[in-house]
Length: 566
Image 1 (cartoon, rainbow, N blue to C red):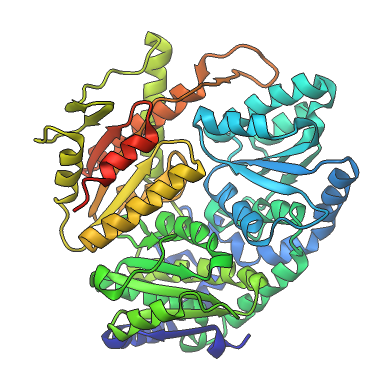
Image 2 (tube, rainbow, N blue to C red):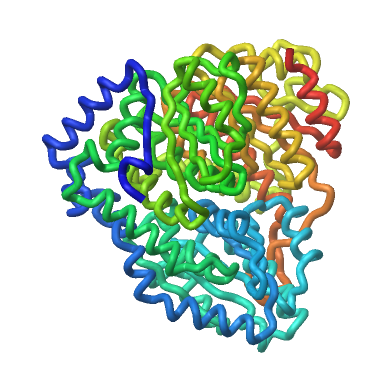
């Protein structure tokens, strides 16, 4: 694909600023410096920069190790495995999910599911649905110590051991981690089928073309060499010697950065239906990379495009159009005619996503440079984790989580936060009505990620957008903590956060150690602590936050909240 056919943009009055930015990128030799791993593109000190640029060349590394992927696929198929369950969070889980949803199921290969919810209902659902004797579990964590991932692992290791025997249990597990991590040692101790040691100089959200993405891609039947070749083609088109004005990643990054500085900091992704899930991967990449130092670019993904009048002047639209699919052509044309800035990216087929992964990674790095932030660290992610750990420590000491007093109780719904209202719908409407132009609304659902609940949240997202004309996002907790949590606490503070919780309908114990029957905590306690910790982290960061606990009726409670929309 040529540079010209890959990306086009209609930016109106913003084109002048983007052209100036591209000239500055050329004058400062920024693209060549990025390829040379020059940390001064972003910050004077190397910090978490020089050890986070391995993604620039990892596609070649993975291609050189393709036989190891092939060997794993052949072995698990020969042993009769039919399903894979990936246990991971954020950068370890989002890319594998894209591969399954975009390319799967492929006859003769494994069917992949992703567990990134600590709700006990989600854990137990996979326990009940999967034939454990025919399932391989991919335990994926860069640090080797991600609390959620290890909790999932300990639970399923015990379940597999009780099903096939302790001596055979390890053969059902594959590890992906950095060299020297706790998981590497654990995989060796428990005789995992395989361990893939990733290039440690890659952050999670930039790891899709490494083992973190490609192990799962191979297992579900993606032609990995083809995918990597598409990535390498775009890397060449975006190479160090290509002038920024002709470099698609430089152009896209300059557009995102300059329009954000001009107030259009809501990048709204519209993608052809067969590649919709790509947006979830982009969401983490942008949100966790740019939301810091009081700056940020909010990615808005998953929402069907509306008519021009439901959008404010804070949007930048990016349309990923798959050849032969015109589902959203009319809607995007209407937005462009209404004067909204629109970037169009054309894909010949699904394998062009290989190139898109690289394009967006480099563009996000460029946008970070334009915003003068470090796109490779995540300084605010830890705040919610620390507070959640404090909640868990209190639980271990007192036998219960810290008490919280609701501001009001309306039937089964309890509302937590400052509100003058006397009913849950009133409180919901009053909270939303605080919004000012340029704000955004975030629905944070610490709920089981079922199809029914997802459908209700998407409907609520659309209804809120149409009512307020604001950008509205939704995410399931704790998944979004590893995706958009950095942005929520590190941006300019223009978010309104609506946390939604409920009582678990059932619970499951988290083993203290793999192979042990001892358990000091359940998944129900873990997700409650995570929700409490995140809400407190938002409040500590000066964010506007409110919590609606729906009790034991999720569907009914969401309907009541939706009824408040005017």
